[in-house]
Length: 310
Image 1 (cartoon, rainbow, N blue to C red):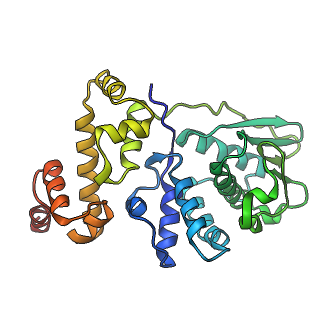
Image 2 (image 1 turned 90 degrees about the horizontal axis):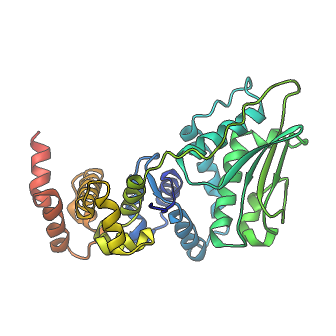
């Protein structure tokens, strides 16, 4: 059983997009994420690594605050939740949690709390990942529930840790309670309305999906059987046995992932081989060309010629 946790690529992707828009250059390990589809699965901790790097290397103390303006537009398009006035805030909160429970490994539960519907995101003792997860959930819900217009007790937001834990990003957080152990969001019910609170533990991500997510979360230059096993938190032999039980071969999976990534990045770069080699983590064009040929079946220039001739 593969336990590697995943989430939609949109969170990592939109941060990369925003960094590109402000000319903040990210390390090569994050370069290829901007080419992912929003709904593709990647490792759940990739966004933590990315945001931690930014926080430690950017001079703008209001980066996250400015990112929020970009974030809310993209996340609304992604979730496709009905934000019309015909849907009350409690139902929107249920729809939000139901959507994310089906596309990500999130430790969430929805509860009926008397006059309120509650989303409770369980948190472990203080860890780096929680800071960014709490901020993303807050920003998402702020947009979905139109939080600025609902500050009169219709929405209550509780964060697990004291305000200092969130650093300068605390400037984003309005009308919240701190140091409450879990991240909890409560939306007031409409009197007399019945709500359908369904179980959130819906397994939609298979073990093979998780293997692909781990493989795609690594830059192609570093992807191998051994590094994939390490990313998945298992031995190479255990990974090989697990994949063999599916009737597949780890090397074939890696070859497929590499081939698709290399071709996609090359296409997105308008056939610029040099830029593609860099963004895929290769230190020289010769090494890139060799990997491209081994996985795609021809050298990069030949591939470009074939595509352009069609």
